[in-house]
Image (cartoon, rainbow, N blue to C red; front, side):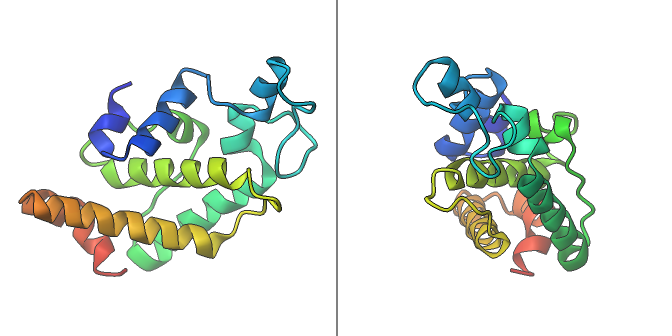
Length: 164
């Protein structure tokens, strides 16, 4: 439960991960169980119940988004990142410092998916997500350099930020 607090200072990302881990994220399935909405189905395709696993891992549109980010990081940054169910839901806890970028990336993407489902036309747009990732990474760069954590910046972020 401490991983999100080691990865980022963004309380929205921390809170989303906390809700995910405690299985209290207000997905359509959960809200339907509480009798707050009529349908438990997915916000994107409405064919299956929108559980946490479905929303972040199983949904067809979400799978395409994860693949597009994997391709981007492999092609542009030469970083092989693989997103599987366990990494998406729980994160990579072993070698926390080494996996800081992939974990933060997962939190950013999950936040994007979760907030985008409330749009009137819930269609995930890769270019929009790419801009959100870029701005979040620039914020991380600023925070690290402002706090004189030059080594951490060079080890984890510089090769990415130089490409942004």
